[in-house]
Image (cartoon, rainbow, N blue to C red):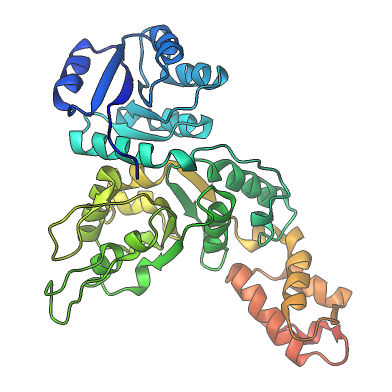
Length: 380
């Protein structure tokens, strides 16, 4: 863990009062270097070689995206934390894709700011660029050559080198967890834990314990144990079906994501965490926000890097390749699909997506006689 010994922060913002305030509220462990314009910020980044850069999106001479591009182009790689109003969220997404470490919404809380700075310093080992290419072994489980799958593979590699949260949207059985695992395996965190938690499969009264752990005596039969966030420390956590998470837990999750630390249920000690968060859902979260069933502020925190996984019916050219993959996973590896069987598979609507295809092929292998899987063996 990084020790806070006079961390130098370059603060690029045109608000002189914000500079004065930041110097007052940050502890003695920080030295704040100020720049009021983008050009000043780029020059001071070169001259000072800061540990952290706080970069406002809205500057008088150039926007924060341009400043970030110039800082990256001259070979500087300190963690860059973007500061923005909610209306600038699309710019934040672009900034993260260009290499920004994280973002904070204005007006920011000092605990959130210090938490992000602390985690950024602890995360320096995870910010090294990876040698990524389309043949990365992490992509092996992602079967398909359709245009949309190739785009998803490119996003997996691009997002794997970032720290920012990923938000995966797709119907049940489309492969959301597979994509999340690929992002983890392609990242610098691949040697650390990957934890997947299905928010819809946990009773509402237990979800906070599963997320954040508990201390002995917190409730009847409670024992001291870590939650999934602690168990995923230095790695990645997948919050699957996050749309099923109750509002009370959403509030606590947002606080943990902002402050980069948690308190176990029934506990009092704050525990720093360093976890990449990937969320997944098959629901329309924006509609849930309108119906007050999902917090808008949490949505903006978790949805910086979006990936939309198409239904299998939208990439039918991948069905023969997927079918062959599932056949080869079976006990009898010599079976082949007849043209009629392949045609029947391609023409089906696949409401259960890839998971349903896997089940259909497994059943067909059992029904098939000799070495051929015929159309009559394909049962939906």
